[in-house]
Structure formats: C-alpha cells, structure tokens
Length: 93
Image (cartoon, rainbow, N blue to C red; front, side):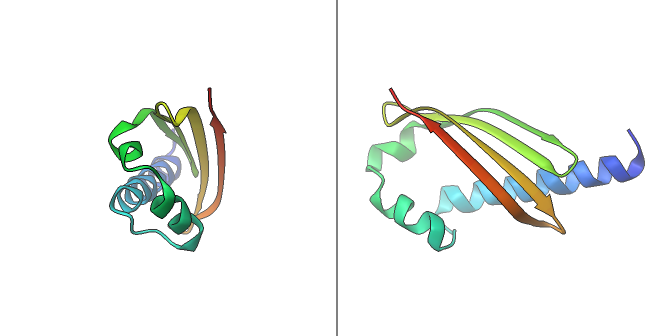
C-alpha cells in the first residue's frame, strides 16, 4: 500500500469515526433528524455495529438494532474530509 493510500484510508477512518460519534450523540443534520427523533428509545440500546472497514475513500458498516432492524449496511464515500455519498440498506424481519 502506498503512503498516499495509507493517508487516504486513515482520513476515511477518521471521518467514519466522527460520523458514528455524531450519530450516537444525535448531532446530525436534517436527513437523520427525523429518524433520531422518531426511533423507539430501546433502539439506541439495541444499536450494535457488527463490522466496520475502510478501503481508500470508502467506509463500510454492518449493524443491527434488533428487533427493529435485524441487519443494515451503510457505505460512505469520503471526499476532502467529508461524506460525499452515503448509501443505506436495512433488512427487517
């Protein structure tokens, strides 16, 4: 892995960690605001990240919040220290 690739992946990891911290604290913008406010209080204690990885500018999460969300994935594309694109796919039972 080149030094530039290592730096890119470290920057992606830093943005991902910041995003997760902001999500956990409710410090997120309008798109997530309704979700955070409408979630059952038990959702937050059930929220668990089961896998987290980064590759270059891409971050990938697998998580659950059973029984509300049995499996979900998020993919984030990080550009210039910010989330440029995020995809979210939930699977419920």
